Length: 127
Image (cartoon, rainbow, N blue to C red; front, side, top):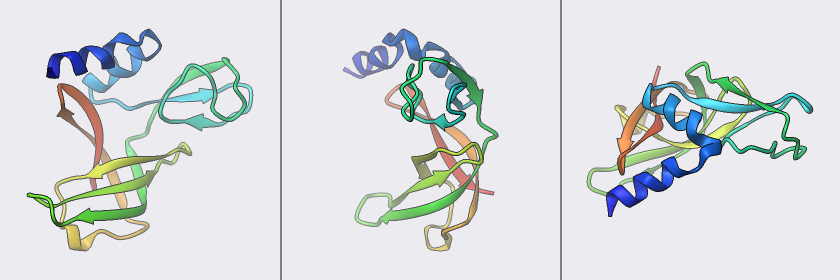
């Protein structure tokens, strides 16, 4: 069953470069050449103006916590957060390798990747 999920991630040709970069621990975003905005999760069309005139843009690998939540009933407890990137997008991600009680709005974090369900996914750690 896990292989079927992994295959589904790879099957979308429009995202082939995204997954290739993720396997190399690089986060790609989409940048629109018409309206100038950058979006994540990458899609072939700009989510702001619907233009197909988009390019891949590699994220700097840093961000700032906009908001977060800690799930303490889980074993082990974990944190998820909205992280705003300097390129513009805010993404929902996990915060890993951290003291859950020390997380703060405005805290600087750095990009990492973890394999989940057979696919590399972006996560962040305190800087």
